[in-house]
Length: 250
Image (cartoon, rainbow, N blue to C red; front, top):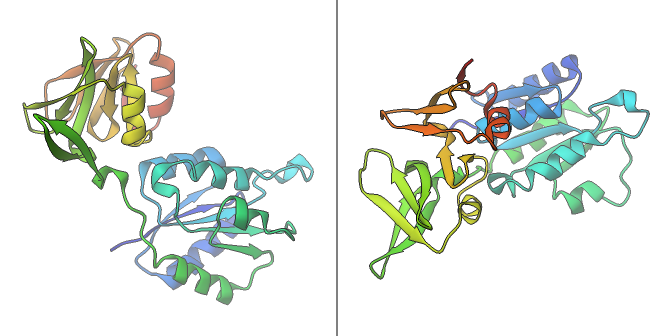
C-alpha cells in the first residue's frame, strides 16, 4: 500500500533534501511538500498522511519566538485520524525536558544538522504504521431495536426535519433516521474534516461535492441531481473551508 508523507518545512532546499530521504526509504511513497501551516493543513485534510516530517521553526523572522511547527503538530493531534500518526520533528531548538515527546507524542525528534542516514532509518520505521481513514469507520445506529452500521464514506449528506436527523446514503433512497441527536454531536462521531455544515441542521460530506455556486448559494453533489443550499449565516465559514478544494462558481 502506498504511504503518504507530509513535509512541513519553510526552506525549499531542505524540503528537497527531506523528499530525497523519504524516497530512499520508500520509493513508492507519495510526498506532499508544504512551506507553511496553511498549506500543511490543506494537505492533511485532503489526504490521509501516514508520516509527518515537521520543522519546528517555520517563521525564523520572529526572533526566537516561533514554535509554529510544534503548534501545527499539536493541532493535528486534535484531528481524529491523526491522533497516533507518527510525527518526526526536525529542529535546532534544545528540548531537555522532551516537551515534544510528552506533549505531542512525537515519534522522534531530530536535531539540525541531521544525519541523513539516521533520519532515513527513522523515516523507514515510521512508515511501518498506517493511518486509518476515518471514512472507513462504521457509524452504528439503532433501527427497530436492532443495531446496524453504515460506513461513514457512504453518507452523502445529513439534514434535519422536525427534530430528527436524516442520513442520506450514496446510491440508496432509504434514509437513516436518528432521533435525539444533533448535527454537532454527529460531526464528532464522524470526523469534522470529512463533513462540513453548509446550513443550520445540514451536513455535507466533502467527498461528494462536485462544485459550488457561491452566488446563488448552492452545492452540486456527485451522482445525483440533488442540490444543497448554503445558509447565509455559515456561507463565509463554509466557503473558506472549501476554498481551493473544489470548483467554485463566482
